[in-house]
Image (cartoon, rainbow, N blue to C red; front, side):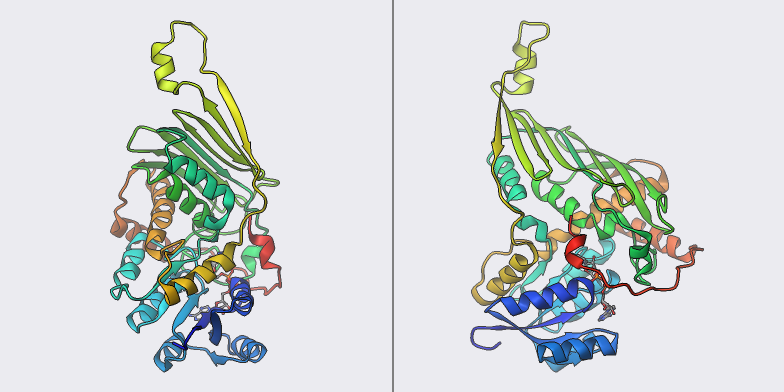
Length: 385
Ligand SMILES: NC(=O)c1ccc[n+]([C@@H]2O[C@H](COP(=O)([O-])OP(=O)(O)OC[C@H]3O[C@@H](n4cnc5c(N)ncnc54)[C@H](O)[C@@H]3O)[C@@H](O)[C@H]2O)c1
């Protein structure tokens, strides 16, 4: 490693990879040493633009030891293979979400992180949003109290058919490994588990290609049960407009709601269960005081995760999103799909091998014919909900 800069390589140079490279330029303590893409012209053009080395094979890049760290921004299945190769060859890794397609692959990837001197982080940029940080603080400090009910509706991930047709890997079991749960929702499922922990039961219906000509899920409703008896719902879709982005936690001490960038906490004067057990009235309710938090903006997102990755490598700073935690959002996504496929509730921890078998069956029996890939330029920043 050079004295004060992390030599970085970005692997996968199209949609989000472009943003990561632009962000490297804005940071003082990381520098772009190399780029890698299986499309040679893309790698070459980007290398010329940034004045760095070009590779078309990630193994050659890792072997040449031209960088200390890699950012993996390829399609999902490659996160596991490239991630393992990078960790085993002694590179720090920042992997895009989802960290892998399924739980068993997550375990394989995480197991490759043997050298704890290597920093292994995941791009869960929504953890930098001050709204979610505030929710987490209110939950962690006990202000919300024990959870009674959780509801997360995230139907603002609207995607056109053109989007799905724009990449050969997209929206197929073999190429992507899933749909909205695996591509768009890892952020939301990560926030859900980061703030509320993991449920112990999932019962879901996933509609496959309901709103688009795709073979994977584009609309999902899931029922969740938590170890303390709290229940939850998770709803998502890529086919609904304008859509809803609403996170609601009902706790003993009141109700937190985040919707349209507005966070409110309606505090109960007396905890709900205590009140219902002790009140002598028929229709009384705990009195409530409502606090609205003034929070501007949505944080620094991707660049903060990248900056934090560099700080963790150079100074040992604590990671905002350790990659190991990425297994939880994958497990939730897998459990929802598995429950839907078998038509039954699924107990967590999920049997990762059983899900992997089911996914392989979906791949083997697929009759979906992908439309010819139509490369369409788009503004990636419009994809963040
Ligand atoms: N964090 C976020 O906000 C965010 C946003 C968009 C995408 N993503 C994630 O980033 C990843 C990439 O998504 P995208 O939309 O940029 O995809 P994309 O298809 O636009 O780009 C992927 C790039 O990877 C290249 N590639 C494929 N296989 C490769 C390999 N083995 N080695 C090197 N390069 C390879 C492709 O040629 C392409 O240039 C996905 O995991 C996606 O879920 C994250």
